[in-house]
Amino acid sequence: MTEFLKPIAETTLSDAFGLVQTHTYDIRRRNGQWQRQVRETYDRGDGAAVLLCDLSDRSVILIRQFRYPAFYRGEPPFILEVCAGKLEGDDAETCARKEAIEETGYRVGTIERAYDCFMSPGSVTERLTLFVGMIDGPPPGNGGGLADEGEDIEVVRLPFVTALGMVATGEIADAKTILLLQYAELKGVFA
Image (cartoon, rainbow, N blue to C red; front, side, top):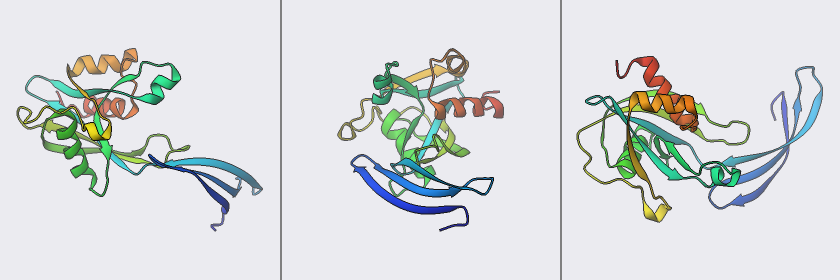
């Protein structure tokens, strides 16, 4: 118990792809009164993502893959995004480098940490570490992800300015990708 929160109950609803739980607790409001609240959390572990940049032709390497939640909402289900994955015991930079090879075939040379952030802290416990990485030569592999993890990934190379424009039009709607493209613009990665 803390001075502002009293846990009451915790119920596991699912532990398949991630841990989904219902939490009941009393929380002290800013006015000093206590209020009972019930919330669900989804814990699938922390992750890392990397925006792959090729300075030689001012392009970025993104991926496109099917995302069921977008389909469920009636949105375009093939989402354009940076490569990313769960840490699964690795540190964030190791994960970002590994995911780049698995998903795109490219190796990351120089890498810069951009942000550590929650993407949806109202219900998802995941904290992402976001990087910008420079690709290191031609891809030694084909990418495409791991079939045994259900991945079927298309590698997409775009001029950086085109990708930025796709944020403005809504064609890129993935938050981590938007953050990293804007970070690259603010930091002058392609200046």
